[in-house]
Structure formats: C-alpha cells, structure tokens
Image: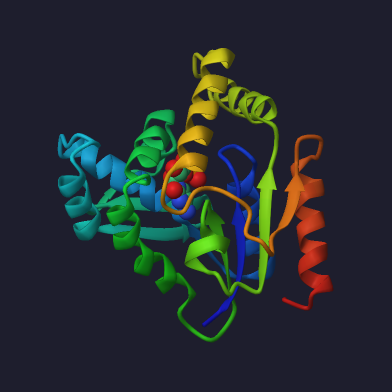
Amino acid sequence: MKTVITIDGPSGAGKGTISQLLAKELGWDFLDSGAIYRLCGLACTNAGIDFTDVAAVTDIAKQLDIKFSITDAGLKTYLAGEEVTAKLRTEQAGTAASHVASIPAVREELLQRQRDFAHGDAGGLIADGRDMGTVVFKNAACKFYLTATAEERANRRYNQLKLAGENVNLAAILQDIKDRDDRDMNRAVAPLKPADDAITIDSTDMSIETVFKSLLGIISDNNLA
Ligand code: C5P
C-alpha cells in the first residue's frame, strides 16, 4: 500500500485546492472522494431516481461507471464515458452528493473503490474527503482536519462563483453550507469529524499559500515524503 495522507473537513475549507497542490508538489496520486459521491448523485439525477429510494440509489452506486484522468488543466471526471467535470462542481451536484452519501449501503458500495486508489508500493496518496482518516484509511501515515468558519467558507465560495460570472447570493450560499454541514456531521454512518489522531488546522485567517506551507512542513518534519 502507498503512503497515505488524509485531508478531511467541511465543504469549502480549501481541502480540494490544498490536496491537489500537495499531490503535485510530492508527485503523489490524489483521491477526490467527494467527486465519487457527486458522480453517484449525478447518475441518480440522470436516471430520474429520487434520493429517498434507497434500493435504487444503492443499485446506481453498485454499477457506477466512472473514470478520473489527471491533466495539466486539473482533474477530469467521466460518468459512463461522458465528461462531467464542470457539471460536478455545481452546488446542485454537491447537495445531491450529500444526500446519497447519507445512505449507509451507498457508502459501503463505494468503500473499496476509494481504497483501490492506495494500491501499489511506490509513491503516495493524498486522500480528500469527510471520512478518509476515520473510516477509509484508518491507518494513514498522517491525518489532517482542515476547517474554517461557515461564514468564511461561504465568502470564499461567493467570490469564486462571482469571479466565474455567476449570479450569486451570499445568504443563500451560507445557508447551503450550514445545511450541508448539518447533514454531513449528523448522519448515522461516517459522520464528518476529526479522527482522534488528526492534526486540526483552522484556515479561517490563513491564505492558501500559508496552509499549503504549514501542511508541507508537517509532512516533511515527519519524514513522510
Ligand atoms: O468534497 P465535496 O464537496 O465534493 O463532497 C460532496 C459531498 O459528498 C459532501 O458534502 C459529503 O456529503 C459527501 N462526501 C462524503 N464523504 C466523503 C466525501 C464527500 O460523505 N469522503
């Protein structure tokens, strides 16, 4: 198994950006586990399946035909052969993901696919998600819990969407983040929480650059890369 470093935390804490920067810097692989749940949610929407239909959603998870490819432009994702990278990043896809992710049988179906990312002896894996350190990679070499206040996370998301030319409402984004936190932290299976042995970093008043350097410092102090 590869050396695994996990980065868990709530939506909008900067996990995705930091994980990709670290994977690039170290020349390691990257697991975006949220994308797997987003793909499952999207497949359900495409098939017209209601998220409350547990058996049908679980069936979709079992048959999920997905592919990831790392390019210079970032991670590209495919569902049943179709590129869905942009579709996957919408708020709608995130909300769909958090609905399907609250179903225990769906999590069970998707567990092995996530663990497969750590197969192999050479190099390492940066695993980004909600339960990477608590469930999927309990024996990870190093675990981080990256967080920030809901208000700061909403502000970051607002600025990102505005830059992309979208018509956005800060209050609605904040409410969406709080709802998602509530679903992710209070679900029965694999709720979002720091692993007992995780290092918690609150990025509220930190730049991406500072967070990146801080994590990289801890990784190198521990001789992990
Ligand atoms: O990280 P991202 O925002 O893409 O995740 C979307 C949703 O997928 C989360 O809000 C969460 O409900 C779910 N998820 C999860 N476990 C993970 C990763 C994501 O439950 N390891």
